[in-house]
Image (cartoon, rainbow, N blue to C red; front, side, top):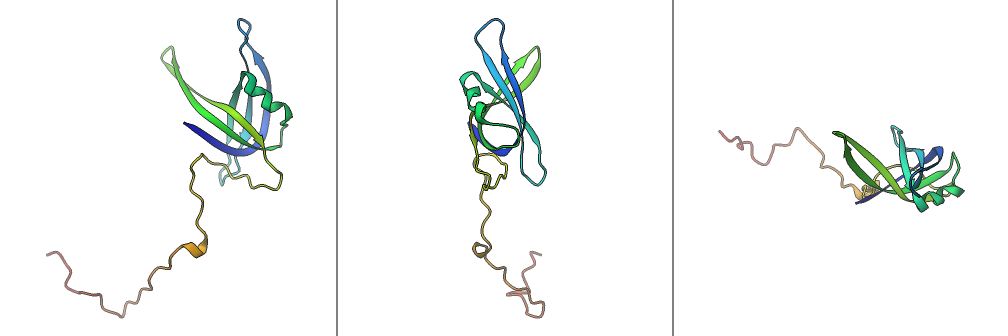
Length: 130
């Protein structure tokens, strides 16, 4: 399952390369633009890290990622692996959230609640179950 999150790049780390293989990755942190912003760290593995070459700290980005978990020595770890990082336009809103979040309905789409009038009797005053 994949997710997406919007935010501002807070930190770009240097590329980390393995000493024993050709594996490399680059990690970065974005700050979400929600009511309660949070800093979220992602990893871009191998050739996916090349997408970060045109990104700098302070840029608005959309990150598409997968959640990966593993166990090692009876401890559990979770990684957010970014597979697509897109730079957003400066004028675009940057609200954070996971893929599939519901858009907020417009005020015109919300039906009006019926008015409560305590002077009018209910349809049946004898609706008690006992």
